[in-house]
Length: 308
Image (cartoon, rainbow, N blue to C red):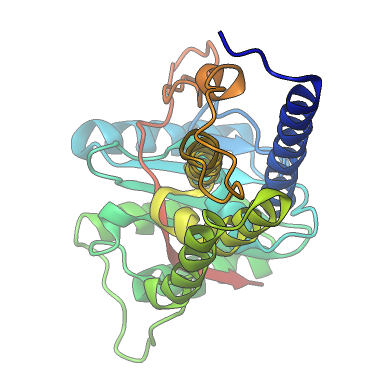
């Protein structure tokens, strides 16, 4: 039986320490990008900014519950007291992907998010509804339904009219006017694919670079490719994919001796690699009377933003 020398053991421990440190670094980078404290989804209308009357909240929730029962589409309304120095587009994606609005097989969710302190609002649309609720239509709803009421101080009327227009649009009963123009939403495939290719090249090259330099190349590659993962899988699962890819690359380098400078195949297969798990994909809301939660959908960055 081969007995590792103290030098070999020390080198192995040192490599593991570097691995853990860089893994934490990757998580920290993503946490800084997705840093908004997303609350737990408890109901269809969550008025954390306190701009709606209780009767309005109850009426909108009843309408949205009936709409979901009829169409399976999930619509949520959230008002936030602060955007925490983030853009409303980034915050909307974080909420959408964390709450998993829409059915998993249909991605048919919509989020109306309002930040009264910053006077910003956004209608975020799941990829499955982007044909029924286009960027142009979302822009018109903001311009014609939400903004006029918000400017006059009628938050109840604005949110009610906006939600009603969203439901009517999905039903095919609300169309944009001819003078509306296409709005640009979040990252498109054309924006993120080039960086994803560059990140993939860096990540592949890192397999053949020995020791610490190879790990650094892997980190750089994953950071560059992260926007593509986020675009494809959403913020949370994009991070999980990046972490899993990092683990797989480190495992291959150690198992197959890639980039180890002739260090052999290595037989250290236990520990962190075998025990890490991304956790369950399930989600449930808190114990509320409505027992409502996201159905597993995700966003694609579609929708429109506005202010007043």
